[in-house]
Image 1 (tube, one colour):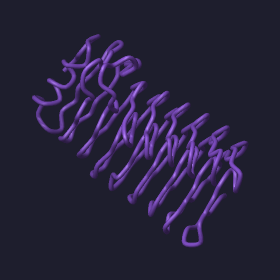
Image 2 (tube, rainbow, N blue to C red; image 1 turned 90 degrees about the horizontal axis):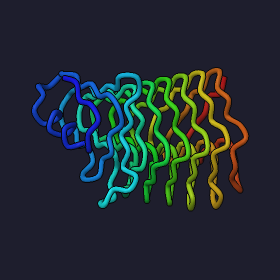
Image 3 (cartoon, helix red, strand yellow; image 1 turned 90 degrees about the vertical axis):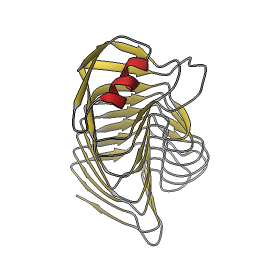
Amino acid sequence: MLITNSDGTAIQNAVDHIQSGGTISLSGDFKLMKDSINIKKNLTLRGIGNAVLDRSGATKKDRVIRCQGNITLENLTLTGGYSTNGGGVKLDGGTVRIISCDIHGNTGIFGGGGIHSQADTLELAGCDISENVSMVAGGGISAVGGTITMSGCNLTGNEAQNSYGGAVGALRSTITMNDCKITANSAPKAQGGGIALVSSASVTATSCDISGNIAPESPDIYIDGSSSTDIQ
C-alpha cells in the first residue's frame, strides 16, 4: 500500500484498515495538521527515499506517532511533535524497530523529546536523533524498562532542560550500543548531559564516541548507585 503527500489522514486510515503484519509505504512530505498517527497493530511503516512526517504548525499539539505492538518504522523523518512524553514517538510495549530514521525538533514535557520507550524491546539502527528537548529528563530518548539495542546511531544537540540525560535518560532499562556517537547534548541543571542511568539501568557500549556533552555533574555519563556501565 502506497500513500503520497497528504495531511496524514490517509496514513491513519491505512493503519486502521490494513491487516496485521502488513506494510504501508509513504512517499513525500506529510503535514500532520490534525491528529498524530496511532498504531495499535503489528505492521511496518516505511518511507520511500525518506518520507517526512511533520507536526510543525499543527493546531493541536501532539506527538508524531504512538506505537502499541510489534512495529517497524523505517526511512522516516519525524519532526515538530510536542507531547507530555515522546514528542517524536511514544512506544507502549511490544518489539519496535526504528531503522534509518531522522528524529529531530520534537519536545516531550516530562521525558523523551525524541522517543519515549516503554517497549519490551527497542532496536535502533542507523538513526539520527538530534535537537530534541525534554523539559525534564531524556531529551533525545527516555526509557522506562525494556531492552534497547542501538547500532550506528548519532545523538547530538538534544537537551534535558531541568533534569538528567540530555541524549538518553534510562530507568530500569538495559542498553547495548555499538558504533554510536553521543556528542554535544546537554543537561544544564543536573547530571548526564550524554547518558544518565538510574534505578538499576545499565549500558554496554562498544566502539562509541560519548564525549563533549554538557552538565554540571558527570557530563558524559551519569550512573546512580544501582546502575552500571561497560564501555569498551
